[in-house]
Length: 294
Image 1 (cartoon, rainbow, N blue to C red):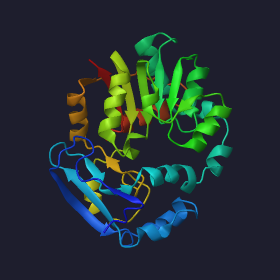
Image 2 (tube, rainbow, N blue to C red; image 1 turned 90 degrees about the vertical axis):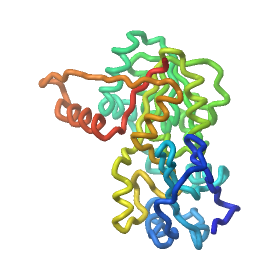
Image 3 (cartoon, one colour; image 1 turned 120 degrees about the vertical axis):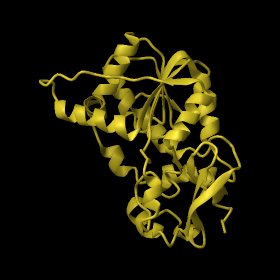
Image 4 (cartoon, rainbow, N blue to C red; image 1 turned 180 degrees about the vertical axis):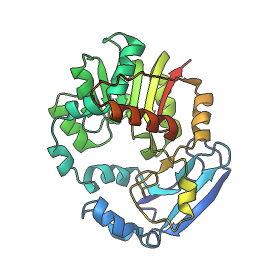
């Protein structure tokens, strides 16, 4: 039973649109202790009563092996989740985002410099959050940057730090050399539609870099008395899990080729151990993908 005033039911695979899907997990939100988790994860504004008598259902597409939550918040309440129910106060008080991102994403900025060798390239960040990545890019000398961010509160914050962001891809007309997205694809209600739009905005030969939660062993986790938590399938939030086979489907459908990137780290570099461990983690977890439009 799904309370339709709050929920939307995804009846087919939201990535390939196949109706050949299988339920691999189904319990009520109460059975997986969602309320207890949300009391810590969200603020007190979230209407807990909407969870009563509704199910947390995980499906897998038999065609592309995409894994997704079947019952999700509808568009209106999904927006409220990110604007009203997630507490922004602590995040908005943080400072020095550009310095943090420069330190934590040195590999990515090194990659961009090596690929393009031109600071004038056109860049789009899809899911800009509070603008840390863009701010760091600007410090690195890049200026031709656009942003998409669905949260009104976050867009207001971006405006204060002189980053112009639009809530929707349909507002963008130009094409980009690089599209970057960090921890956004797992939140998409309509991943098929959004990925198609992103690829259309990417120039031939352009690059798509995106990060997602690993999710490689999620099905094993379901067998162990799964309860709501902040992971690759956080209830109503991380509603999509990209298996390796589903990522192969994306590459094949949209004519994208994987780019292998190797960097040689000098032992006397700052953060040497941190950089090497980060490289190993991303390589073997499948969390970060670098794709080129052919």
